[in-house]
Length: 145
Image (cartoon, rainbow, N blue to C red; front, side, top):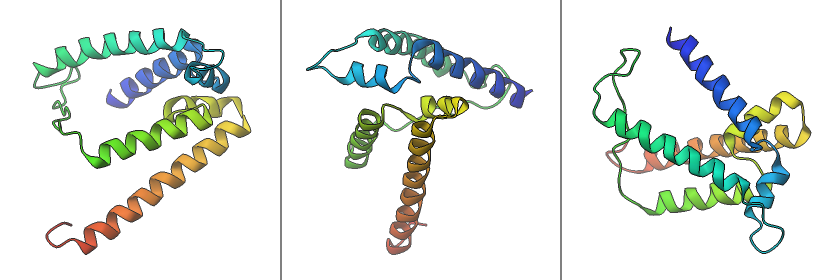
């Protein structure tokens, strides 16, 4: 049942990305181009996502188990540290330069575009590089493994 629900939710998310235009890099870059021909339509998509997410997290906060009976695992970190800021900057730079963020890039792979494939490969390489650097750092830091 869990795999079926994950598939259903992922499919719904992908359809939402396509319908909202998030899989179109030109639309995303137009949203980020504040000094040029700015396209504010994705701001409404983000606003709707924030409203739905706020409601969902508010509901989840008071639950011990998910609707499927699994234990709730909500994030507990609240600190804004150097790693968070640098990661956010890297994410934003990649989004602005490529016109994709991870979800829309994966949804765009279905169209067979070279740009989505190149972005996804670069994203995966960046994730692999992060893992390698994390392991090196953990090996060098006493008490951290």
